[in-house]
Amino acid sequence: MKRLLIIEDEVSFAGILARRMSKHGYECALAHDATQALLKARQFKPSHILLDMKLADDNGLALIAPLKGAVPQAMLVLLTGYASIATAVEAMRLGADNYLTKPADTATLLKVLDEEAPKAIAPEVDEAPLSPKRVEWEHLQQVLTANKGNVSATARQLGMHRRTLQRKLLKKPLDISQ
Figure 1 (cartoon, rainbow, N blue to C red):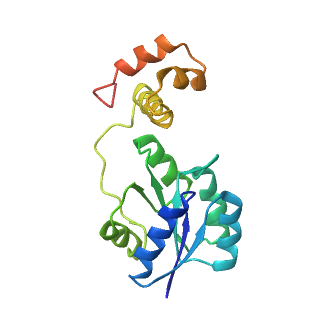
Figure 2 (cartoon, rainbow, N blue to C red):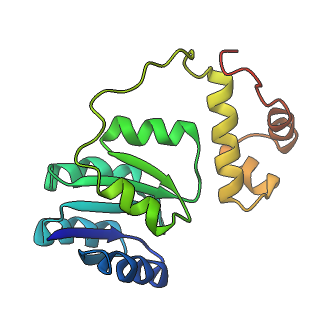
């Protein structure tokens, strides 16, 4: 039987995910914070892990390495409502097997979780890596989203002047190789 550990701070959403996945043959366990997640991973020994990127005051990215250390055979999928290329790259670099944006439908979750192994052969990428300006812009967008569009709160959090932030947000790099 496939064992799925769902690490999600929204209790109701975690319950919905567990019910959905149980109907498709997964034995599910839930964790709602970082400490509980690591404890459950060691006890439950999941074959699959769904990890939310934002766990109350914790960052799911910081949990990837400890979870992979505790259960190295488990397929780990990072779920996020704050998707960006930069966080997807960072998640994969840290050891996540896949990265999905919320809300993910059941068919997508099953497709990702039922993969036998992470893709060993990646398609050739002809694109140049992201420019520093593009990475910065995406980070600003992510922090702005986390602050629910509040430019002043975002500027305070980033330690910059509000007008400077507004100018940077207006200068979206169109070409990723700039």
